[in-house]
Amino acid sequence: MSDEHGQEFEDDRVTIASVEQSLPRVVPPVDMFDRILAEIRPEATVVPLQPRVHRRVVVPVVGTLAAIAAVVLIAVVALGGDEPGTPDARAAIAGKSDPAVSGEALLFGSDADGGTVQVTLRDVPAAPSGHHYEVWVLREEGGGEMESVGVFIPTSGDVDLELQLPGPGNYAAVDVSVEEDGGPSIHSDTSLAGGSFS
Image 1 (cartoon, helix red, strand yellow):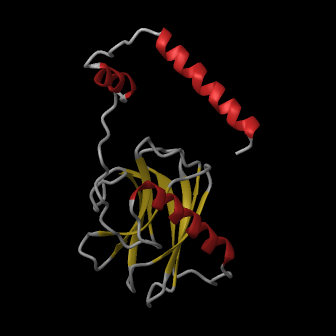
Image 2 (tube, rainbow, N blue to C red):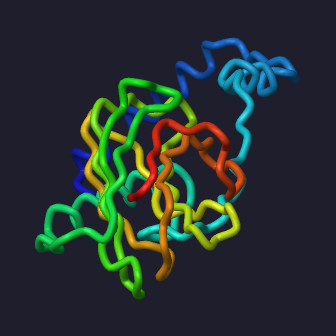
């Protein structure tokens, strides 16, 4: 250290010592730390999300962010694929909880592994807070149990999806449900829209 810097340091030390001696000694209250914590703590209670059961979807879905990622991946598949040819079956989709929703579902290769359903929806409202939409299919021989094929959160009123079918079969219907984020892995019984294949 140079003599100049050493002198500056010594001057600063002397000044600090002088100021410290001129100030009265004050002992803070015993509960000061508790009062500070009370001021900065948030008023809301944080509730951890329950893990969501994996469903048969394009990608495994865990919570809302994964649902958003799933729809982005689905959109890429839908936009990047070749025209699949003549559909096995077609369903006109009509709104249920929201009559303005309309669309169409097309089945391709539904009698073999690797079959898909293309779902086109128009005038889709934003999902309610804390909810997302889920697409289900119903097989004629499935005993009345709907099977989940994908989830999405719309970024606009127009939604185009290409989803993997759960397996070969004769499909009778398609449904779009309103599901609570982190809810049970069964249909909520609230349908946004749906239709029957013919």
